[in-house]
Amino acid sequence: MLRLITLICLTLALPVLGVLGSWLALDAAAWALLQHQLSTVLAGYAWASLLLCLGVGAGVLMLGGATAVAVSLFDFPGRRVFEWALLLPMAMPAYVAAYAYTDALQYSGMLQTMLRDWTGLQGALWPDVRSLPGAIVLFVLCLYPYVYLLTRTALAERAVGLMETARLLGAGSWRRVREVALPLARPALAAGLALALMETLADYGVGAYFGLTTFTTGIYKAWLVMNDRMAAAQLASVLLLVVGALLWLERRSQARLRFGASRSGAQHAAEARAMHLRGAAAAGAVLLCALPILLGFVFPLLALLKLMWLEARYGEFGLPLLRFVDWSLTSLKLAGIASLLAVSLALALAFATRIGGGGPLLKGATRVVALGYAVPGAVIAVGILLPLGWLQTHAPELGLTSIVTGTITGLIYAYLVRFSGVALQSIESGYSRISPNVDETARLLGASRARLLIELHAPLLARSALAAALLVFVDVMKELPATLVLRPFNSDTLAVVAYQLARDERLGEAALPSLAIVLVGLVPVVMLSRALRKR
Image (cartoon, rainbow, N blue to C red; front, side):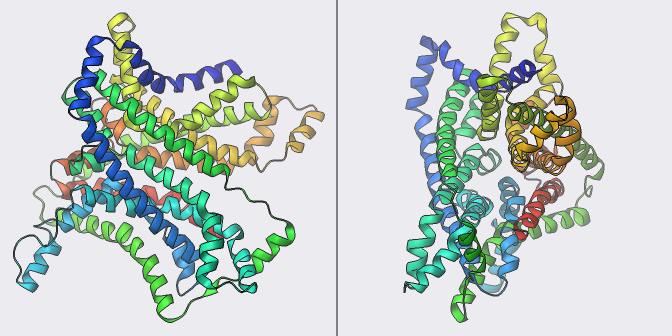
């Protein structure tokens, strides 16, 4: 059984190995292609991706860090509401927000039209949102919760108590923030920044819709437009190296997030109170926390609702409700199967690791599964299709192409590569709350491994397994890059349909599937908000 689990884990590493292994076939033609890309498109892809990352990085650090400091260290009207409401933009995928903002802010949109009527101005009142600066703003509004969440958690553990101690020693307010709170939050800021940048580099929907020349859009252009798998593999490997560096930064920062505290110190931190703000300072804190919620969730949600209403009332065919049911059923089927398999694999892996079976090989395979979430969907798609193409050339009798691309098998495999790490993290978190003494007691009473898992661990891990299933379910519902390439015919998901309709400028029809994705994305946000309120 342990060998089977290890084999499954290693199988999930094949897409990454397939991308990196493409360099083994670096012959004269491939080298010439690489030189051609270096002299033509590679510099543009690197420059656009760099500018995008720099802008998004600076934005999420400032916005996520500032909001976390505000709700963690200060007391002002509405603070308790902002603590959980600041997580709402996590439910809004960046590509969905891009559709909403494009319709609302474009030249012919309602906002510019009304302003021209009121002011008498002519022409465009602001630059086109479908640009690199527009993409940076959208990513910042949708991804700052990564920095906010980690920073707020780090500050909530000890910052208030330590700042109270600094106040008693005579330090001023801003000095306490600068010299006490920010050093404590530095690892959390770095970890949140790395996560936000990984999501930015993995995005395809915003880049393709806005016409950006990033690495991800370049991979799809090389594969689907130029029909050049070697060029796609070379671009995917470069993107993989960048993401690997960000993952190393995130893991290194996460390792530094742990602080030791005595019982008396923890009690002092709990009893310490946040600094109360009045007047202009309180109004500034309220504005700081309200703007990202309004711009990152409320405004795009209202824009989508308006689009859906207009389509239902004035559209030639109304809302595509029958097709929407088909899209929803496909998405639900894929998400349900993927979440069930991912949680089952995570349970088996976590249990095997806990009982000490499998040795270093299983532990290494477990780490490979845990790293899957950092791999962009575009890289996974290329990593699956490259070996598949080689097998089709050298062993066509196997018929693997029809199985992987003609059924949902390839999609489910890609989802497991991408999201099994999410389930594993949740299950391992549940196991961390189960004392090893419980296992020892059960073994002394003669319980077998199977009975230990089924009768003891499973009930204790029920909530963690449910949370893992929900997280994987929602991630699959929102996934776009891998689904766009690997889906079989007549298997369009809500994310794919929303992208295709928006690409064809049918934003009214794209509103309904986009809203469905947002509503599903609210589930883990609500769960996370409840967990934070219990802390």
